[in-house]
Length: 169
Image (cartoon, rainbow, N blue to C red; front, top):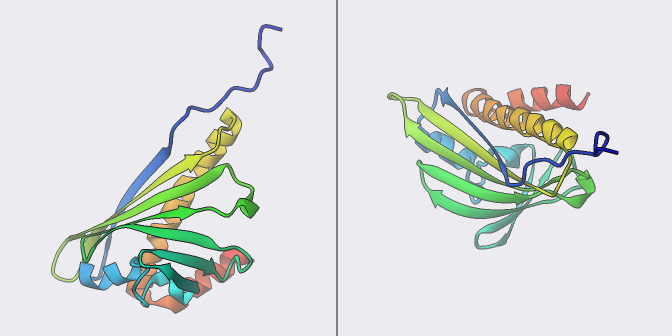
C-alpha cells in the first residue's frame, strides 16, 4: 500500500573514490610496488601474483588463500600511472562485481612523490541499504590500500605483515 515498505533501489552506475597522499620515496621506487608485472609489487610480499597473459594476472592474497582475483592491466606508464581492472570472486558474496583501480604518481620533492589513488566500483543492482554499506566499504578499502602502500614503501613488508596480522585477528 502506497509503496511505504517497498525497498528503494540504489542509483545505477559506478561509485568512485579518490584519495591522495605523499610517500617519502621517489616515484621510480613507488611505481614497481603497484605494477603487477614487477616482482617488487607490494601484494607479492603478502600473496602470490601469477601472470596469465601479457597484461593479465591472478592474485591470491595470504589473508584469503582460497580466492583468486583476476587482474587485467589497463594502463602502464612507468613512474607516472598504473591502472588495472580487478574482478571480485563470486564467493565473496558482495554486490561489487569489479573495480578499476588507478595510481597516479607525481614528484613532490627530491625523495618523495604524491600518489593519487582512484577506485571505481561497478556493482550489480542493489538496495539503498546495500548501497550505503558498499560506499563505506570501498571508501575504507581505498584508504587502506593507499595507507598500506605508503607503509610498505617507507617501512617495508614486515610493517605490512604486522598490520595484516592485526586485521586477521
